Length: 294
Image 1 (tube, rainbow, N blue to C red):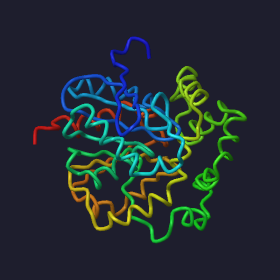
Image 2 (image 1 turned 135 degrees about the vertical axis):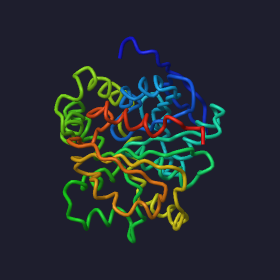
Image 3 (image 1 turned 180 degrees about the vertical axis):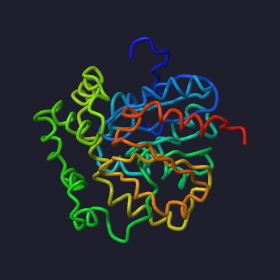
């Protein structure tokens, strides 16, 4: 977006180079994107948070964009993803931050609030709820569910298979993802789509797909978190028409996040930051406006 005053920066953290975009001064707010996105999915929130007196920091997650892309499949499990977030805070000499996540970024911020609570001032899940640990491995749960809306996660499991599918028609595949799960067809311009297409054409999709290939591994690791609560102030932003991360999945979250506020954005699909930017910005600024002043 031409004319924006954000800055592109790099930092070494946890053995990888992380690219991030930053704008504003004040209490730090780290924004974590999902699949298949980039820091760019927060382009509407970064200036809004900066204008509200906050320091917006939006990295490319490992495997994405201009951040490093380790080769090992296991390098994309939740321990590494939360480690990157903590490492980013360490490198920027930030003791505590607000952490906001959408889709996979949402899974990371809820996990971070459980694994490294001393670094989290507040946490916001955008579409992504804090889910209880399932009794069985996620791949089995998904296969047995009969829910066609989530079977793509099984298709993603075999290394190379999904990559070949995307590469046959990268732009078409991405467009189907972006507009198939959205409720507002015009929420992204052709120019916006090309930002993503160019990034994944250059960096590939193996890193991003490896997030999915670690879901059973993450499930095993999460056994150590059983019984823990997210005790900091938490906001859950639900999107009425998200076909996968449906609002009803947030039922019972209060038992694991007792200091929880819920908000529903109506007529919104999966890509909330981009589909309903002004509404999300208003909720974020309202929830975060006094961060660091408790």
